[in-house]
Image (spheres, protein in one colour):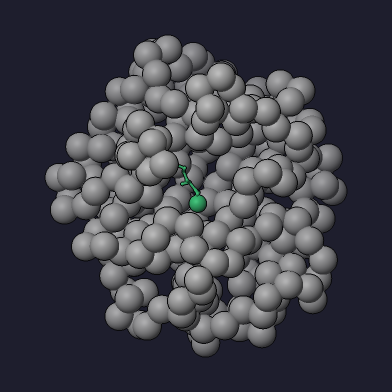
Length: 251
Ligand code: MF3
Ligand code: CO
């Protein structure tokens, strides 16, 4: 179902997005060598509860945690665990916040410590830039393929793989609504963008293949070749005045 949102509904989602962005800012200062992703998950869950919101991912199709924590070759949906993060790791934290029934979704990749390789730093930089290039295409009259195309062509020009098996999505009172937002595609193709659409753009780029496999836990998605993966995700509203980022953390 594709539901266009009213201005008031978009404001409600921006309010959820504000808590989510603040939570990311708090995590950023807590992510360092020695910290575990389970500790970060507990912090994020408590932060959400303390700010009048709920962690929407917990219990979603049986997902057991408030956050997804995806380290190095993990693409997405990694389980927070008790392994201390190491200097030089990269970790993506993905969260969905529910405030009064309205949702916001944002993932962000972080460096752990000061020992991150130049290769990994470049991947982070290009992946974030790909997200913002995609957002810039999210204007009334453009089509979904314009978003996917710019992300794919930019990523591939840098030699990166664009993960196909996980996508962006519409969002509102449900985590996953229509439409599906591919991070690859052809310009001028796909659904036309309309004011009131709220969706996520969340490119996952790898230093190698875009092929994925799922661990025995049934959730953790990794790159087939063990290459690194980064992801940045915002929830955005499409308006007559252009895209509005509802999960903006000022970065
Ligand atoms: N936040 C993720 C997304 O972008 C969904 C996480 S799956 C869950 O769609 F099961 F953990 F919720
Ligand atoms: Co999402």
